[in-house]
Amino acid sequence: MEVTHSIRERTIAENSLVILLQGLQGHVTTVELRDESSARGRLVNVDAFMNVRLEEVDYCDRRGRPSKVAELFITGRNVRYVHIPDHVDIMETIQTQLKKIHRVRNFGSRHGGRKEYTKKTPRK
Amino acid sequence: MFETPGKFEMMADEVEQQQTTNTVEEPLDLIRLSLDERIYVKMRNDRELRGRLHAYDQHLNMILGDVEETVTTIEIDEETYEEIYKSTKRNIPMLFVRGDGVVLVAPPLRVG
Image (cartoon, rainbow over all chains, first blue to last red; front, side, top):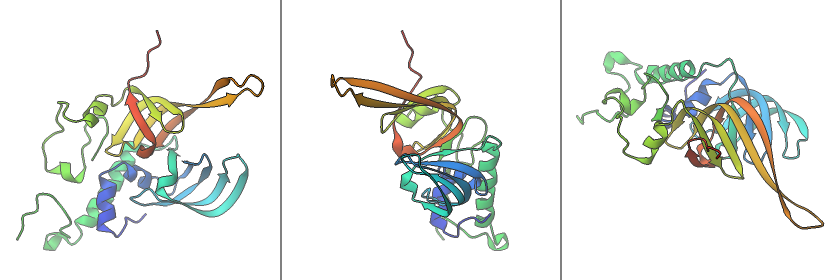
């Protein structure tokens, strides 16, 4: 499960609860949208802006009419809720996801790491 | 940064800093006081949530456990034209709530 290549997105994600949703990638969840429709499927990807990609989706529109969709992209703004599966350990998921980000940040540690944005980095 | 109950503090700008302060300095700190407590959340579109606050962040994205969602609708009686308030409830074991839907956060309302 890849961490985004964008430094900006990594920083946004690690400083908000979106990181939990990123850790749910691969799980089957229900996403409820702002317009009262809902989509249940496997989370393929969640980005820092909460944009969601789902696959093998059972989609119910606002009226409750069901349909099946192979792939669904939901804009982050349109998310109202995400149901978290019962078997997920939230703390562990977040910590694992953070470790992945830190691993990317510290890549190339022989030369002092990637030197991503940290507040305390002194100017050379 | 976001807050979860317990010893865990791993946000980038916190790693090298001091422990989270215990004093209330900004409005979000009031929410921090409610961590792991049951809270009442008023949301947009006439929705209310009652659940246990497990985590929140600066956007007011929240993770709530044992949640009861109440959706209130107003129906107009066709004959008398009076407004009838109806509410629908449902329970969800663990819910992630996107912060832009949140209007207010409070301790659970006590009746009487």
